[in-house]
Amino acid sequence: MVFVAVFWNGVETILLTVSRELSVVKGEVSDWLTITSGVPQGSLLGPLLFIIYINDLPGVISKDSSLALYADDSKLYRIINSQDDMSSFQDDLDKISDWCKDNKMRINTNKCKLMRITRKRCPLVRDYHINDQSLENLHI
Image 1 (cartoon, rainbow, N blue to C red):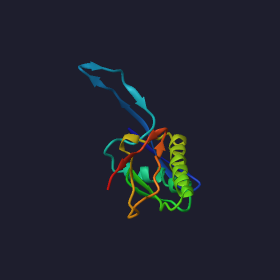
Image 2: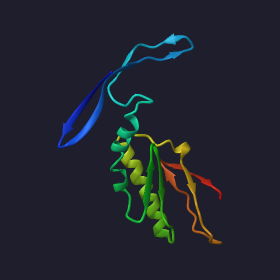
Image 3: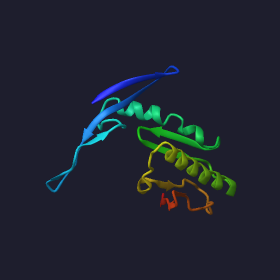
Image 4: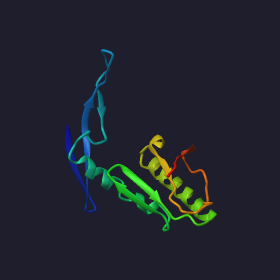
């Protein structure tokens, strides 16, 4: 494997340029496949490269929402006081989904959960979705 540092307008990008892998399933071995992108699993640079890669993600959401990033996890949150707030929250989910598609990333919707924290007796409730899949509600 070879790492190449490319400098462009003062920004350093480190690319994995050559890697090969194969698969073995039930004793059957696939042909070698050249991998031209990505970061080796367990590498020291992997987390840093991922943070650099997703650095612009918080800029796609509305100003009244917040996005907390930690490693490869993220949490989108917002105070919901009206129907407009609920619509804006769904819009932000859609913007994040679009950003991921544009950047060749997939959201594992099976790991995405919705948590409402409220003391209201009759809170505003809506189903939210990512990529046409409804988010599971956690009951707290």
